[in-house]
Image (cartoon, rainbow, N blue to C red; front, top):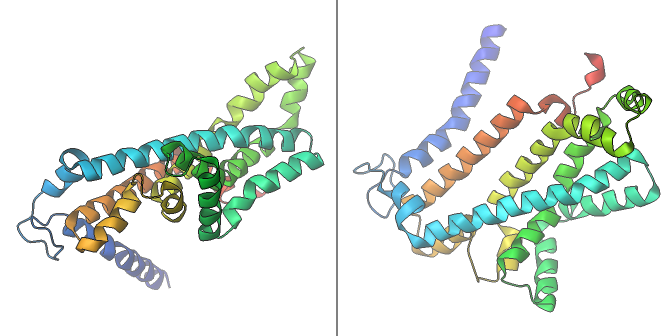
Length: 265
């Protein structure tokens, strides 16, 4: 039975890895078409994507700005709501948490169309900062969840001990609450970072063709057919995702973030 299980897992891993191998190999083509196996293997397409081709380098920078900005803003918006929900459990905090989570539950195309009309009315359509805010609102539910999980993991006796020692609420927050929730805050930040970096639908509507992220540039380049540079972009997405989620697994409380019951330990 163990042999069958090992064979099944190995076969599953192989099937999952094959498309990745094909994409990685396609990025090595020297021409403008993707072939497998690659013809005249070269790393020139990587140079185009990261250094020499303005269309792709600008798109990459736009993706980084939007992703980092959206992740930072989402965390800053989620923290007060999560803390209010944990500390008071009031109707207001529950309402704010529900509103903060709602955009993530709405179909992206519906949310994107709505934001497109909103930014057109307010004058932000096509602005890079509007893309940052849009992604932050769309993905705020992720840090809201991770930070809430971190706050719920705090032993209330630690707060009682701090109060007994004369610590004010502000001091207890800085010395007890904040240090214990740092991994969950960072995890929420990186979840937003990865999803924003890969998101296409919402940014398509709010950018209004004024700028392009990597996902939009891939879509625009499809008019000229599949090129090896697109494969480089796909490898970049994959590498960022692997690095980020590996970091979360290493330094974050991944079992709890995935919903594991910690009380059974």
